[in-house]
Length: 219
Image 1 (cartoon, rainbow, N blue to C red):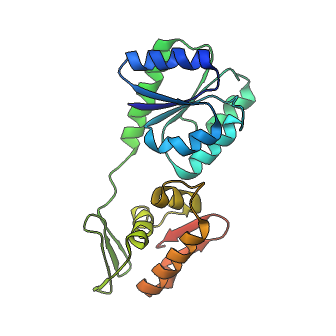
Image 2: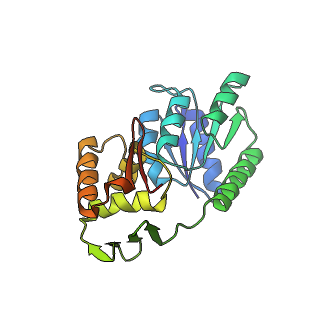
């Protein structure tokens, strides 16, 4: 699997990259937390050190969890109870304290990815909310039986919301999935597309703004 290693220590990183590669994984490495926030979309799992030069690793974890459910294993020398509890509460799938045996790390990676695979259920390919029908495969939208013409970006925004109908979706997650990066996308562009969606669907009550967080499609 594609493993993103977020580690600033060259010696530790080189050893881990060699070990992961020799056991069939495809590892890549970044040194800084900001780089991890850009590179995570190409990975299937993140190994995250907490002592990074630019951002605290727990802050990186918090920002990752705002936009992705990607499995994250914290791998750090920080073994105090407070750090472990905070890491797990912020959404780490596992927490390992250095030095860690390679066999244990590989077993933890396997366990985390199995849990993630079991938890992920395929999204319904046609979503119906009220009298609005979103066909995710055909990329078609119907409201009251009439087809609604959307631009590719408008449909992309609606598709993210429809795949999680009834669930709150953060602005960061929307921007990350539609534009490719929550931290580079222009926030105003998202606002414009949401305004256009409401106007074209002509059912403003279906798309709820959750102040300070994001949006929800449906009740």
